[in-house]
Image (cartoon, rainbow, N blue to C red; front, side, top):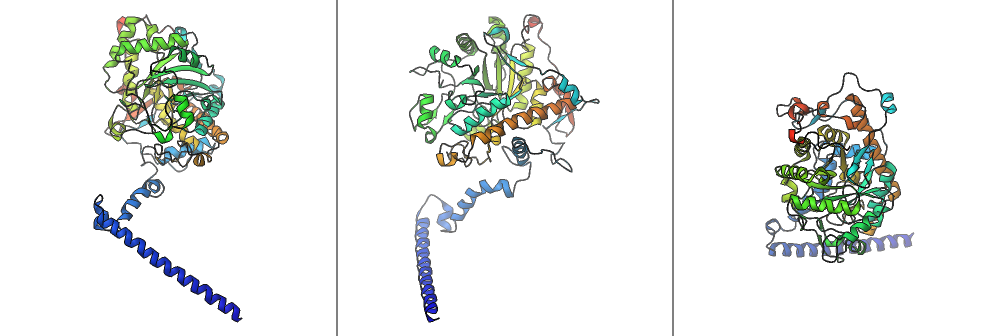
Length: 512
């Protein structure tokens, strides 16, 4: 009994000594912090309120991570609110996406879209009996036109901005869903090819993957890329939604050996693309480049840009007619000012360029005015992640829709906003192997495919409710936009159909 008592006394003495050391040590640490705070001159809060002033910066840091869980309402957050992210997550997991009691979305908020159901919606059985409508790129104007039945595809995301497991999952998922994957401007990597999906090769301003030793466009490398059967189309990037007028930015801490080899740049150095193609300074140069790429590859060649000043569209379409409609880009990918990126200056991200909802009708109407409706396909891109987003773009005149961040959510993105820090907690935008191990490409590829398939299905359901056979037949008469007065205004009233100019009637649109 005495031995146990003595042991307990010994333990308590040790504990008291440890506690005393802890208190003394803590006091010393606080004293050091106090001295550091009152002597530093960079932060006024710490100098005026030493020690406790540091809590302000700590709470500011962790607030970013906790705000979405405890403080924001379902439809408040930006860039994507909880309702949007939740729909993508449920569709990716094939979880029931139905809701109860009523919608939490206000129906009188200016700028929102509402869809106009038909008096006699299409029966599901009728829709199943109809053949799907293909989208053809290039038609008679290229040696190898591209045909797809999917109006929803994966937008440009580079290997580098995204990790190898993420690109691998996207490639396999795209193949399973029958959709294409855009490489982004960082060239084509083995991970893009792994799944066997159709690929759109993007030529950025730095021309990664198709550049010679001087950084100029290489005919030989273009032919090498075109020889890859999976590569179906080429896209010349002029500008990007989140940073129009600024080239792509990949921080040096994300430039690994494999990425450097793929792009042809030094390891560990920032990869910064020029803010435009050095050999494209006007519309004539642009059409020359399109023709060069198309002639060398034999495959559909298009352009991607964010619409800012719209006047140049008249110059573009006029020059196409001067040269002949064969000179036109086979497609135009229109990005939105609120598109995403891994890194961009806030000044450009916040305020540069037009959002898709204002620029898309301008581009569609201008194309139609010049009689190029069937010659040039229009792909809408930028923050289009839900069925209502996609259906609205189709109603406005887009032939197809690309999404990047929607598929990132399908991969498991939690909107941690760490894309440029190489610390993405889900392994999607980091090259830290410890973080990447949480991303299982096999599982995530299924979710990528599920998201795409459920998107196609849901937009189809919306089209049937509007009384049309398939989403390709959605028009402006099938949707309305809420006006500043809070009243729905049919799209065909706000944006009436534009008639083709007389001089351009009958000499184009012969190829679908």
